[in-house]
Length: 283
Image (tube, rainbow, N blue to C red; front, side):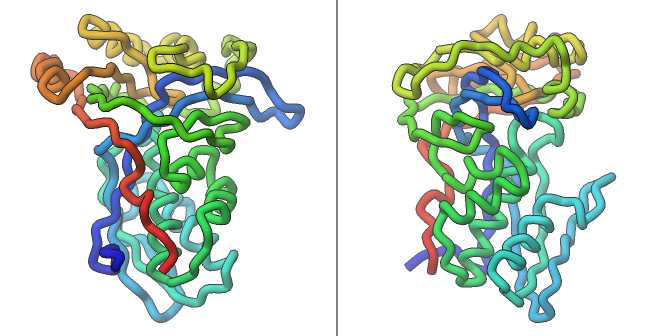
């Protein structure tokens, strides 16, 4: 019997981009990407309470974000619209991931809403359908619904699962929000990295084509990369601002974190073999 229910605390884990290359651009302006997504055991937490009036309410609105614009509310309402569901829900979000950090926090929240309410409302939609619904909310939502570490292509929605070795990560949070649109609009962005086949990817391959632009626009990102690079190879995740380095075990990661200067914020997290909700099926 599945243990997930209305009393559960539902995880929305962060993702790291182990590499991120821009390999082209479509005629409609969308960039063609190649990346490897890895989930880690640090993220936001959500709770849900049923409502009989069909309303979708956010009990914990984020500062500066109107509830109707919040991805959690939009995900729930889109799921209602797509299925004709008349049930309502009150959503409580414990935000632990930074906004504009490149860790997929908002997208992960939206995906957890889709997965949880599909289960709690007994809608029975397959993951492929939920991924399609999620894509309408944002390019990173489908990977969290997909639920497996993966090599991703296209605009980030075509997946090939990858088995990743155990690892720990130190993730630093520069005190800036990096708008993804700003990075992709930059004329300095490299858009011609040679594409590779998913089978040819291996740990340690590639870099992040967005990093040079983010570093140029946000000196704090460069500062954090500079500090962490004394302990290992550093990459930026997504369009930034967060940066990370990989370590073999928890002890090594926490030893680095213990040396973090007082003005910097960071945390250590274990790389997950899959999303915590990967085994969640339709009731």
